[in-house]
Image 1 (cartoon, helix red, strand yellow):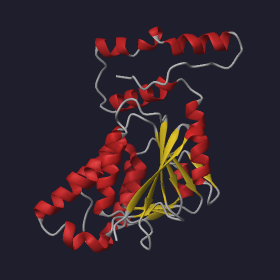
Image 2 (cartoon, rainbow, N blue to C red; image 1 turned 180 degrees about the vertical axis):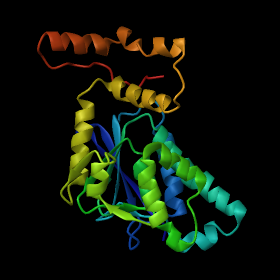
Image 3 (cartoon, rainbow, N blue to C red; image 1 turned 60 degrees about the horizontal axis):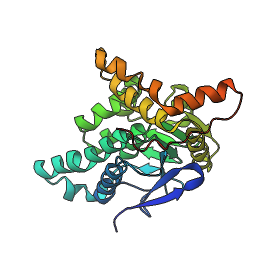
Image 4 (cartoon, rainbow, N blue to C red; image 1 turned 90 degrees about the vertical axis):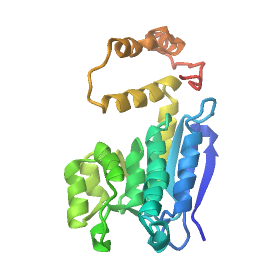
Length: 267
């Protein structure tokens, strides 16, 4: 039986909750789930959608306990199939999550291991229950992390943390990742999704275009190359945005802003 991806709209938070489920395997991510994640997050890059954010979580008391090892002899049977698995399925899904124009929030309970760690790292914000565990102890399985996936992780997680996870096979608790700033919110077990929805509501309180643009600029600045003159001018496009005029007027008039647009026409 293949894993399943469930989606549930939460209109009050203007967000879409996406749930990983692979019953009996603590939501281990099989090829079908990787493919479904890639398809869904590619669709979420489209304009005109009503969501302001996406929450990624796992069914039950686990986020995802890694890849589905039982299918490895089939999906990684030779070089061609292994490249298709890691580039065409896993890599495609991870890049689609990272490149999603909407803020993506991970709501993590229990194990967040291997592929689960990779998915959580691609999210913009991470909420975890106190008993959540994080790692990639694949050295015990006799293989190293595919470099394409490691490159994505290295962009988003501290290199020293990755070294400990990969070289020692360490599985670390939420307290450790909280202390390193990898987790943005730490909550009591069973409340990660609740807090993630609260985060989504806080995103909604801001001007619709702002979160998208902050995410876009953060991605651009990871390149660590100087901004062009054109980019510097584009960085001030908000001067002509009605949401900017409304936000500033609301502040000066000591009232709540009323943003008229939904930011879905963002180019």
